[in-house]
Image 1 (cartoon, rainbow, N blue to C red):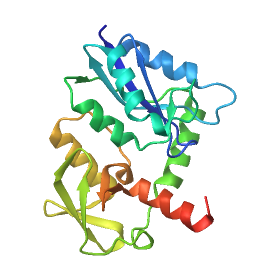
Image 2: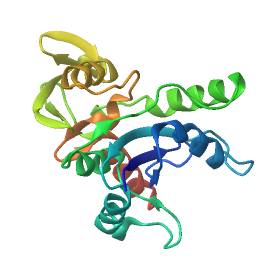
Image 3: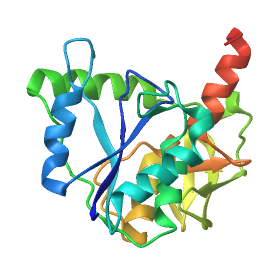
Length: 207
């Protein structure tokens, strides 16, 4: 049956996403509100949503595809980079319906943005990424950016932040993103920068 497949994440749960389905784009906001309970410190966000012809079948396929990363057999949470799920969805026919904006009141949104800002700061040198190295975009690996000093990149001859370059690239590809974290969209040696940071942190602290 036609419906919407969504990928949701929460900055308080780094490295984890929820892969689920709902009836229509209009019901996405209600789904986000349902997930934001008193036991969750920050609101969930819809990372990506797609209208598809058979949401039930695609959800099953995605759950099977990422089954080894499932956190709990009766929960739809997976320890996987959200971009891997988006790429899997993009193989088929879909229409992007990712909503803009956040749920919650002003205080919720301020707390969320503060935590995202703290987490989004990334230093490339400790990740083994140096000036002159090439980053590739997750959603089209023919799109690249060259690392510059100060955690900047050269994207099509323009000096940009990681997030600014990612936003430009996504807009050129036709995605609806309004604000992005560059560390989720740029890859180095087959890992997103977020994945690479988490892996190195786990190795360093014995996670």
